[in-house]
Length: 333
Image (cartoon, rainbow, N blue to C red; front, side, top):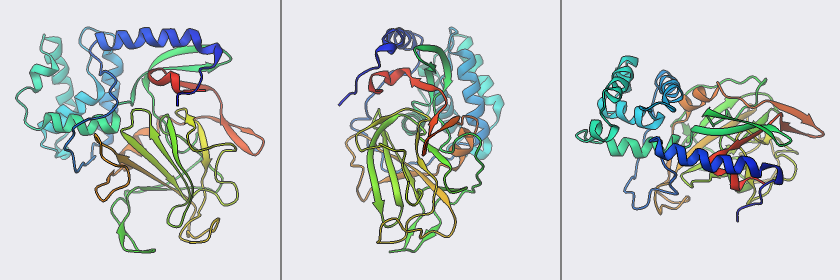
């Protein structure tokens, strides 16, 4: 159920509607609830950091011009051009694409004869379709509307962490399996933030992930998994299943719980956050034998530029200022 809008945000809601109308007319991607009828059964996300950074910069620079270059479209074009082999990446290829747009071509015409473009566009839209757009920041009814990256690092600003690409490595507790996420090593109690806004779908103990949180994005395409949270006080006070959370909002605290059938046990050897992302296409079930989890290592590095500032509030931490994703303003309390 959609939650009520704060009264003081009515004005910005009206502005959001106008912004969205402009976005669609300017050629930016329209809002879609899901990829109905999708036949995607497998997906790989191996876009290098440099390509994401360059595509983001070009999207921001061109979004108010007559030739906007959308973040996802740009990456899908490159992936198709390279046949998925990102070792071929050159920033000059993005510059050349923009020049073609400036010369009157459209993305539809440019990609019409490119085999697999629609496939890559669907995959990257599932991963990054809500990454760039309009948002508002501020507090107390005083907000500033901006355009840019709308996702946040899962680790709050001011807290150190380390990680390496451990996706697919073996795990043996309980049964043999692959590691379907990225472990971010840090300090117990580090505030963990929602990468994107969405609904809390899962909250509680799991013998493998310990105290964990599962959040489904508002467009239903992504399921974010945060695991091994702190013993004793794993979640922000009051967090509950069904709650809508904002991008960058503190949802829990880094810990080392898990690997135990008994609740609230520190079964991990080092404190860390297990962060994972599952893609959900069409009518696919979130829990099935055909789950699609992607390697988020490069994505975590990309999100390091966007870390939520937090302030102490009793036994918890809150983000320092509000952040409203204007595409989904109706979902915020």
